[in-house]
Every structure is written in structure tokens, then in C-alpha cells.
Length: 228
Image (cartoon, rainbow, N blue to C red; front, side, top):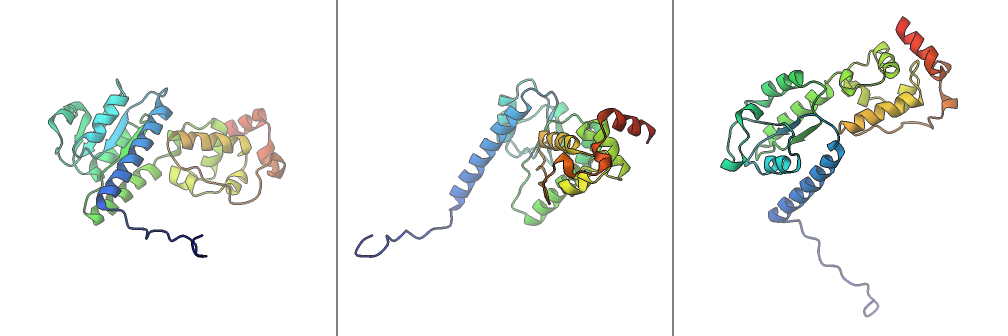
């Protein structure tokens, strides 16, 4: 207190363009380093969506030696020493190249880094929707779920990852043969692939709260799965 008045804080200013760039690069660096640790012991290729000047690609290849890194962009406009070899460079519109790559590398890719923003806001919205659609439209088979959870979802016509993410815990636990163990396994598989795991929308998920069908022991559930 000074003269009976609280101290005056300086006016908060909007970050400059330089500062916003710095914040973005710092956040990207932190996120990529986290991702490197997450996939360290998991084999599989990496997708880099957007080559740009090649700085991120250079960072990826430095920290993921020996890993296949496939780079997607509309054209080459990067530093000469940051150009991927022809076998790992996919040129064209993402609306055409990404669906084809998803089919080719189904259930194999362990990391997708999307860095395709431009000064064209309409294009950014289009690309964001395209990338999200390709991820959310992926079949649940790509999660490698245990057979009990997988069969329960298929029985309820849940075939896409996007459908799965739209469901709350309570909705899943009401499904036949989908108990707490299946829920935990599903969330683990989703987290391993970088998806934000949905939170519970209702009360606790104790086994005592589950329908009788969800409390069947593993042997009985497996038998039901074989029959269904």
C-alpha cells in the first residue's frame, strides 16, 4: 500500500507479433519433446503435415534417428539441407494425399505433427477440418482394443473413433460387456494415439453401479463374444 492506495499495475499489453511467434515456437518445442518421449519405445512411422522451410522436419529427424518420417505439403519451399528424400516426401493437396496415406499406413503411424497453417484463414479452417476428419473417421480397429471391448462397441454400431470420443463414460458403461476394465483399456489406447480422453459425464464408475451384463467375468464374456 502506498498513501493508502493499492499499487498500480502496468497496463497489460497485447503481445507483439514477435512475441506471439516466440510463444508458438516454445509451445511447439515443448509438445514435440513430450511426444518424443511418448513414442520412444514404440515402432512406427511419423507424419509431418506441412514442410514449410523444413525447420520442424529437421528437429524431428534429429530427435527420431532411424525413424521413417513422411512429410506432406503442396510444394517444396524449404532450405536445401532440410529437404526429405523422394521416398519420404508426399506432394499434393492434403485432401488427396492424406486419405491415401491413411489407407497405406493404417494402424502403423505413431505420431502426426500438423504444422500447415498459412496467412489464409479460410485455408487453415479447411485443413483443420480435413485433418480432424481423417483422424475421427478412422475405424476403431486402429486402436487395437481387446476383443471384449471391441465386440461390445461393434455390437452397438460404434465403428469410428469419432463416435467413440463423442460418448461419455456412463454411456459406454451401459453397454453389454463393457465394464470398468474395458473403459480403462479404451482410454489408454486413445491416449497412446494422442487423443484427448473424454471425461465422465455422470456419477462414479464403480463396478457396483454397472448393469449386470457388464459385470460378467472374462470367461463368460469371451464366450458371449464368440457367439455374437
